[in-house]
Amino acid sequence: MSRRALVSVSNKSDLAPFVSRLVSCGYEILSTGGTARILRDSGIPVVDVSQVTGFPEIFSGRVKTLHPKIHGGLLARRDHKEDQQQARDQQIEMIDLAVVNLYPFRETVARPEATLEDAIENIDIGGPSMIRSAAKNFRFVTVVVDPVDYNWVAKELESDGGVAEPQRFHLACKAFAHTADYDAHIANYLFGCGSGQGSAGDELPRLLTLQADKVMDLRYGENPHQRAALYRHKGGAGRATVAGAEQLQGKELSFNNYLDLEAAWRLVQEFDNPVCAIIKHNNPCGVGEAGTLVESYRCALATDLVSAFGSVISFNREVDSATADELSKLFVEAIIAPGYSEEARRRLGGKKNLRLMRIEPSRARAFPWDIKSIQGGLLAQDWDRFYLTEKDLKVVSHRSPSSREMEDMLFAWRVCKHVKSNAIVFATGGRTLGIGAGQMSRVDSVRLASQKATGPLQGAVMASDAFFPFRDGLDEAARAGIVAAIEPGGSVRDEEVIRAADEHNMALVFTGIRHFRH
Image: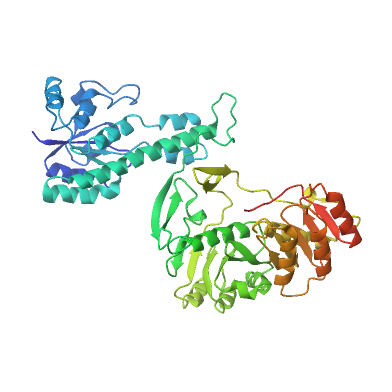
């Protein structure tokens, strides 16, 4: 009796050549529906599954392969006398190879016009069942779910007459990962839709499943003794994410490079005008907004020349030749931008180790939740997408800010949102002057920002990511020359802080919104 292969796939890439090779190796092909039609059109002889089961496809194809003659052929143990006797009694023939992949659920729900009904009709039932049956019985059955594996599997069959058990086990592991990922995507989508029983679709899900493909191993993690790898969320925004950005040149990216690239790219997306952010250890050490990209870079660089050495730099515009000329004067680990002019590529090409990353502009998040890991679990929250405008502000000081001060405060606030708490940003004229990050007390962040400033602070403004618990932060800022401040407000000592602002003739505005970053 010839060996049997069951072929039922949604992704028909490279299918016919592979199945032709199976036929050449002596396999009889069982198939269903559209897969069978394509194989026949390619001149490949096919036996319909309904001919094997003696039962027609019903319910518009919803039931085709859910039958003992299919699952028995996949699950029967070849070395088990009772299994084999029962198979003979029930006239069940063995199936030695299963080539199955699933309805395009992910692709369907990714379409903007997709409805819940569309999603439901693309939930595969028979496919996962066949895959799991074949994978469970990997000692005797080969299961193939990915067209990437077609060629080497065919070579094994052609050279050795079969696939060795270690390789069958590998394919079974891949098959279970395939169905687990598929079910997780369905669960995430349905939880996101809401139950229709009063649960809102924008609630955090009761079950949170993370789906990501391993892209590559990294040399190490944050430190050389830690292992690390890059994973990419399935069904994400592709090239519009740091994980999916295209590397144009340079050596391999590190774990820390990716963290800094993410911080850099998030920051520049806050702005519409040409902007540059220079990132070191996940914090901005300089940000500039100007009429041209090269001027925005110069403004960002002037904040902290020392920290900019070995930094990661981001832009929200295509990098031009003038900006590339300036960049070539500084040692930089990586640059991320929506693109690079031909001349910019040529000028930066001499720095062979410099990583150039191209990313598609998008403020969409590839994954709906911001996730952080803790021992034994995960924390999930919404992304911090709040975008502050002047109409959101409340002036609480006697003196109202001038239009220039207001513009500077909004700039400083958008930068401050991306600085680790406690965060203080001094700024003027579309550029940062000093940044205080990660201090345990807010007044120390004010002092640090003042110490880091590379120029006079007289007439500059200050942004604070959270409220001032005491007046000392404003007293320190006033001594440094700060004339206006923006902060959330909400402290039990707000009145004390407001009095300090008035004593220093400082304009003070409250946002009512906080931007902690731990």
